[in-house]
Image 1: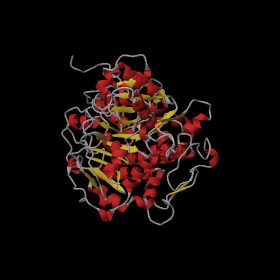
Image 2: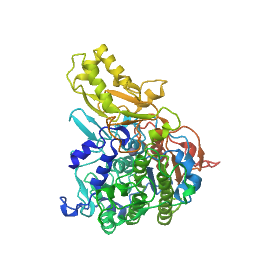
Image 3: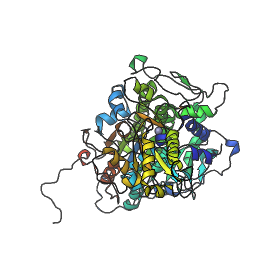
Image 4: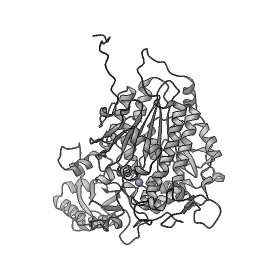
Length: 600
Ligand SMILES: [Zn+2]
């Protein structure tokens, strides 16, 4: 399958990447498939910005106020806030250090409905909500192009692979409607600021880095790629040549702790393991297990294992060394988004040994990363912020064991009911152009007609509400301009509604109902997902550590949109547009001298 087709298919149907897990693995795997001999692209062209800037510290105004030398933004994809409470007793490294020495916001949650990866990263990086920054999903229906569009797809950009990796398509942050914290930092500081990001996912690396990152690097084509929208760093080429992903072939993911240390069952209820794996440990990275060479399944397994987190950590440490991050005289920025916890969570669910072990190992990776930063940048010279892009819902079959109302909402059933409802009225079939995640888009002209046809509109809304698992449905016009409302669900839907990009109708699943793009008679090929306005999807940790931070536990209700304003405050810059606020309660207060010498 062509990459363009894959891209069009993957994020398409389902909010929260709960679209078919098989497709996901095919994407990850096909994306990661090595095809060095089929290289169609010239190796990435090295451009000088980062190293050149490193050598030329910018001018400094007189009486420079203190600032961190480096901002480190860590996103853990799909990290639920309660993982900290459940698992912290087993942490001894970096996660423990964050919780015990940092400012831990225990009640942070996204205030919107579109709890997906691209949306969360855009919110973290801009300090704005999707209604402002315009990133409403991983992919949405492009009404003009009449096709699904991934949040980073840029027809003017061209991707390039490191170390001979084949790269396809083009990605950038051009659909992001506001500058990121990093864009503003580079522009306003006037000094040497380098912006470097890493992730397995393009949407994570790109949204963290903003419009003009010096380097944004993600996994694709069996290795690592970037886009000509960003700079290219020659040392990444050297690193990935020396350490290809396939070096992890043949390794086995085993339990880090004794089996009695794990909560829940060794086989998670309702889990769907990646191809080639059983439902319980150990998990060998051998693909289908037939050959001795990495295959498609191997890359899917690798991305769904802690080995990928460790790889990202090493890649990051190498960048710190090679660029001398934190030594430019300005404020550098390093963004890392760990994707594997998301893939593990989709497969095995939040109540699994796999998730618990993922965090035991991430704790060790972060310990190493922080030690590296201490040695190279200096403890206290950098500030870290850790958060997640969204949480996750328990696997429905697992939740059903509690007696709760839980299940799977099949979107093709919704689509069919809408078509059936409109048969009694004079509408051209098919009336529905696409259901993307939980956004329903009508074919051109249909929704305008419906708005003037109350009987048909009522029939459509009633039909949608009759589908098992549907809690409610909102019309676009109920969500425009973020109306004042006491309904938390409507408020959340409105906070991630962006006219022109969001659907005509926004479907709200019931709590603990997983929305699926698969028909009811097809076996689900993933365990669970996210993408709803419920607390299990919205609630994530926020922890700051280091320069300018007042350690402690904070219980106020905050959101990840508060991260960028807080970092901006620490760095002394202004964000033009923000929906979040400065988390001033977690900032060190400097005593004002009794005899102020300030000019009156
Ligand atoms: Zn996900």
